[in-house]
Image (cartoon, rainbow, N blue to C red; front, side, top):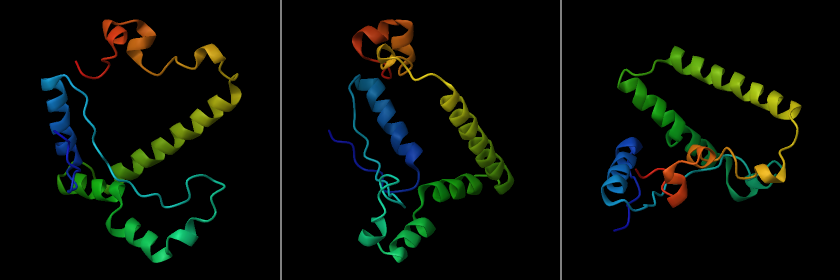
Length: 137
């Protein structure tokens, strides 16, 4: 049975249902989550304004931005206020800056490291890593 695309902002309920099904049936599932890119696909893509109007982009930012919708939902539920949201945003920016500094100061990874630090299970040789069931148990 195919998983239907979530049509409302309560994505966690939809994903929760998918996770329950995965755990119950021990089978993978596909969850489609449509996204919208405000800018080009990469820094060299300066043509993004040619295939989308500024009005379309602003409309998507205004009424359909998933982050804004999620913040509104958390606010309605009394989970997050504006000050806490701003604090989280600032902490995330600081963490990103520290990560860039660390990465730039680090040696490039060796070819042999291409598959390390992807799955905890693989790095630690757990039974799940031997059968490819990292997230389904």
